[in-house]
Image: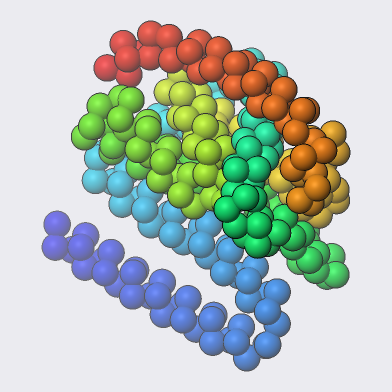
Length: 266
């Protein structure tokens, strides 16, 4: 036990020393884009690996028990459909949030709708896109569903664990309501299939669309996306229809995924 703790301490010190050294070297280069990419890489690799390895080792969880490929292929079509539904719901619920906020704080709405400038460096766009679309979904699903939700379900029960872990996940996102529903769907997919690969695919598809919206077409889909204060009014009808339709369909999928879930988890 003592030897194991000492080895972990040494590894931790070496990791911190390496991060500090790399940070100092990056500061010397003066390249803000490079510094940010390295930060993202560290954030989505070192931190999740530390959290997951500590938790899995403590509770004797094998990665192959919660991450496997068997039976995953048949979930790809429904996951693709869920991705589109979640996208439509997220856009329309964000419209509703901004529409309610515009009368209270129009300045905040203007800031929220101001497009983020796209850097001219192609390498940065590619690196950032790959991290957000591929690395982030893997890291976040292992941390939020593989560790946090596991622990909360064990402590609080099935639905409280799903709800609280989804709430914590949504707190790290701008579109809180959209992120919360996404997290609930991801949690149910994991519990239904038994493998983190399925919610990772959902997350990957979703983030890929987000990268496309950011780097290629910020107005996608144009019939629904709000990019100005005027759009809050001119696109009210399609957003309201989309919100009602996507909410109903997502509720149906959630109820289907949740069917007999308590028996399966217990």
